[in-house]
Image 1 (cartoon, rainbow, N blue to C red):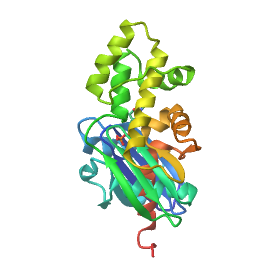
Image 2: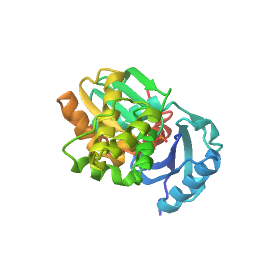
Image 3: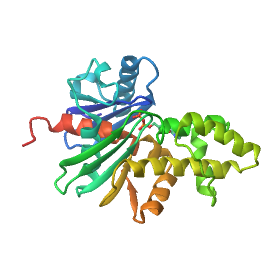
Amino acid sequence: VPEARLFCGVDVGASATKVVLVDEGCTVVARVVRPSGVDYAATADACLAEALAEAGAHRTIVERVIATGYGRSNVAFADRAMTEIHCHGLGCWEHLRQAMTIVDIGGQDNKVIHLDGVGHRVNFKMNRKCAAGTGAFLEEIALRLDLAVSELDRLASASTEAVRLSSFCTVFAKTEILAHLRRGARVEAIVRGAFESVIARVIEMDPLDGRVVLSGGVAAYNPTIAEILARRIGRPVEITPFPQHAGAFGAALSAARQGKET
Ligand code: ADP
């Protein structure tokens, strides 16, 4: 049972809520994820309770809480809030400590974040206007193909061919998929085509220079996405450790270091 103080990061995403607890040495002691659902506040509470149970710790030893994510204003127990751009940057920087381009593919938005060699953010792009190229797009494809999202990666990695989807749009892609199925296209090839569509959308967002690192739920469950991106840009692509929790980890790190930063 940890005696020392703990610090908490809460990332309330449009799709999933993540909580990370770190100790004073910034070591992760608990990591939790749950669907955000409709009651963000209740989900955040439940995630914190689960994380405390995982760490075998009592609420009173949590010294500071920082909230991030789309629904960050709903976390009543947070001491302050920070943007996801900032928190994903911190979370990925902690592992690599080099200039990098972070590509966060989330449930309902994508971000490209450029960090310089000392971890400062030099630039970023965010797409929050539509589901194209996000986890929600893949969820919709899974639904149309009568698959669970957890089956997508295995299918995409098993396929050597990809059915080209001419539209990024979730609504149009749905119609297209039905037409492909009727024509006898293989499900694996359609899934791989959907992965390629996600990557094409990401590549359009911003130049992916230097070291490319993926974060977010899509890369967490679909490592094939990194392979497809690497092939497209002709360079290696890494996935940050526990990628879906990168934002919550960054928030927790910030909570642990507040007042210590120069
Ligand atoms: P956000 O922060 O925007 O809520 P996340 O970064 O947590 O989103 O990513 C959510 C996405 O991760 C989902 O849209 C889905 O594509 C993917 N995902 C989540 N859980 C699973 C799972 N069990 N299997 C496959 N994919 C998953």
